[in-house]
Length: 190
Image (cartoon, rainbow, N blue to C red; front, side, top):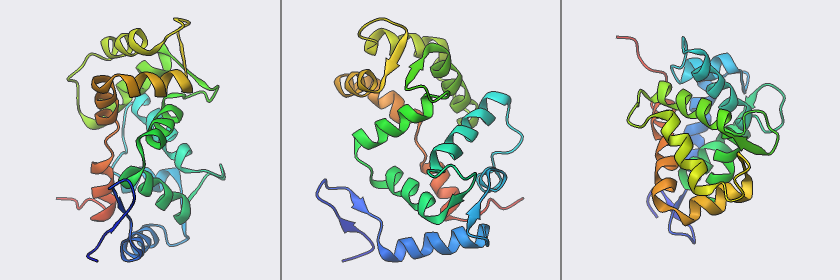
């Protein structure tokens, strides 16, 4: 029974030992048991970002903050980590949708998609794909009623039907580097 337990889907679950390690790291960084937005940015080395990137990080924090109290507690934190590590694709797509739906109105418009994608590129240092081309591609492929907005249903069903687009979206939200920073502790200054 090594360090991981298997689950029905063939993915791995976070074990009690791993949860304890995450808990110790979380409490080391946030002794109060509550993480503020400032602490979240500091932990991940995401300070001094441009406005778009800051909006993305704020949105990410707000999605992790399930009860909307302005803090991420350990349960909210471990739920997010668990989703990133072992969440099923439909769970991740719902989470991605929430992240893209910056105004929370239940749909993603072109401006929201463009802004979030540019913010992600700024944070990840990737500019392999033009943000406007990416936005146009997404809407061309999955906005079935051509109304300029993507509903959750359009988003999920469109991405599930187009593996290339799904892969692009998934790669843009690869949070493994974020988890490595958290798992290894705060970045050391050199």
